[in-house]
Image 1 (cartoon, rainbow, N blue to C red):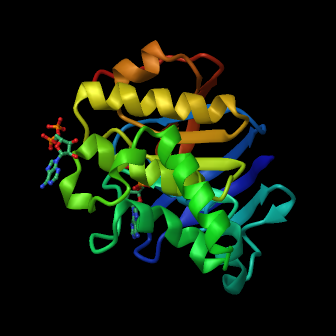
Image 2: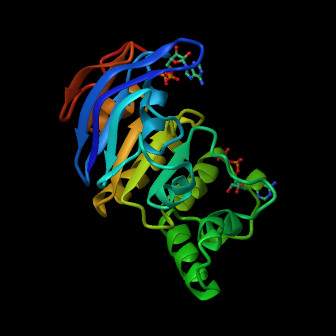
Image 3: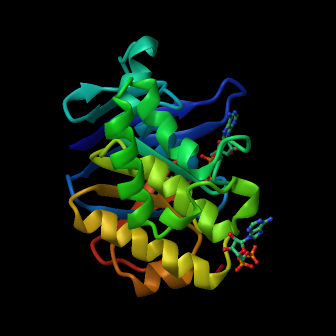
Length: 228
Ligand code: ADP
Ligand code: ADP
């Protein structure tokens, strides 16, 4: 359901970030993307939600080629792909509830459906009781839970996460991983770039390793494979 063919990406400064990527990820898989800093991991996953376009090659997601997707269709794509960042990217002036509801208000869902869906996902991430809080009133782990709730409130088939535990202590990181596993067990594909060696080596999943813009390793139930 995600298929990249001969994907190359050269940034405008001449840096070759992706150098011939070929990969297939099936619906429902859980994939870690690992590799040294600067290897191309972020660029690789940015391709999947069309934050960046390939210089050449194709990226098919559920039959749509993102390399050819018109810019005005990107918002529609984003409704079907949830994205989670290392730094949460919550809107500071909105409450937890409003941050999660935002994605549904944009598509003009009815207030009744919005309330039902928002409270459902806040319950799933264990934060129903903090719906009226503002992001700066939450711990880092809680903020990441809100951002995960926001990423799944539209019931996307795919969730892309770039270093989601990068700003969290170990306890909160394991909690966030449990959540991703729950979401994956409901059938959602998860693609997660991470530097967290312990997590990758403990919660065994497919591992795609990228170095110098190429996939150098792709193993079901793989290891992290680096020292840091
Ligand atoms: P990683 O996520 O593995 O650290 P990135 O995909 O962020 O790797 O970066 C791959 C390479 O592309 C690096 O050399 C980085 O400096 C470069 N790069 C990333 N984003 C940009 C950009 N917007 N413009 C120019 N170069 C970039
Ligand atoms: P951590 O366990 O990550 O250190 P904190 O000490 O930041 O978390 O927060 C502990 C709890 O107190 C959290 O549940 C958070 O929601 C709540 N909290 C933190 N700061 C505030 C605040 N300014 N107003 C209300 N609740 C807060």
